[in-house]
Image (cartoon, rainbow, N blue to C red; front, top):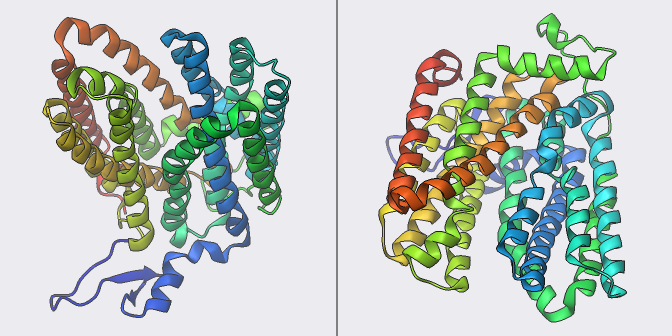
Length: 439
């Protein structure tokens, strides 16, 4: 639903209900952009998601710093980081529960667990009993649940937001994550330095409690089957395992969903390691900067992502989200290829800024494609299956760790970006009817 200009250079227009709304009417334009907030559930969900995302980032930075300073072990730090993905394997199961119980009810239960775990760690820290072992234990328990928060968020949006406003709602939801990666991380660093671990976790616990209170205001209704959809999408199985199998089968046998799932795995395998886990290596060995320089590199990507999310909010998103996913993923790989070969930190930051921007548009468009193509009774399960693609990220990092010492940093990244770009093009060709030509 992108903005367009007339031949005379008139102001961009936005779509609402299938017709154009002139952008020069500022009040009308704002109503179109923030149409999702007309839904009561979303008015509660958005601030609840925002607080949860900020608390996540505060926790990740605070505990990561604690693990590193208390043990001096990079292995300890990487083990802690890997535990954050532990619950991804359970994502399809969480999707089954959401389709049965409702995503709102699941979010409330999950966020209650976040608050409880944060309170336990706060108590341990206040009593001076916290140890790295306790950090790993609590990270393991939290890691079983936390990765599935995004599954519930997107499923709830798909269940409550009208299709015409879905892209804007997803973009607004993405803002909560992108802003947290900047502000939440900085807040966690500042609080842990100024207040110490115990008091920092008191703040984190309060943020989780506030998020939980807002979550009680979202819709808790389980999605109803779509009577107009295929019979397989409206059959509710009595078996949880059968529901899970049905969700996997549905994703694999729906062409657009299968193509998107494979693309998501390729992105996690070959793109996110470059803009995430390998940044410390680039900062030290390529750009020869300190931790502050590393922070600026990471912030550049996050700022670009936030700008991309805001652009999607303002414009309403592309008309063809599936096509936009392919195009912006290809641009992302092209920018990462440039990043692999630049030697100046300033140019690297600018490249990451642009990469973060197109990455955000690609990921929001991908989510919109999945929600639009999945039947109502299958949305949460489809998003849960999509979350399994995240396991490409640790595989990509491990492979890069073995490859870089043998062929060099630039050659390894060139291989990754070339492979990712090739897979993106192949997916576009194989599923062109379902992805490239789809509206």
